[in-house]
Image (cartoon, rainbow, N blue to C red; front, side, top):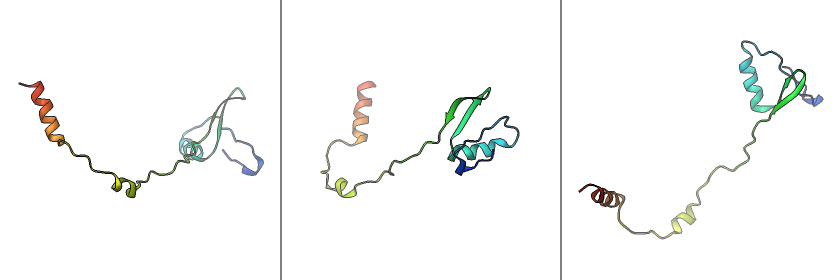
Length: 86
């Protein structure tokens, strides 16, 4: 499974044997792989590129929000249980 990035060609994997799974796994993480049958392309595996930004908290906005009062979670659960069990 040697590749020449400058050629623009995608190498093929004919008969993966013992020990090739680690090489294939590393290749799948970074390169496009074409699966062929009878010399004809059947599927193309393309790595997913995660371009999303990591989640961040806007602490200034969060702290600016008013606190909402009400019964505690324990009180809500106790009331719910008392309604179901006499």
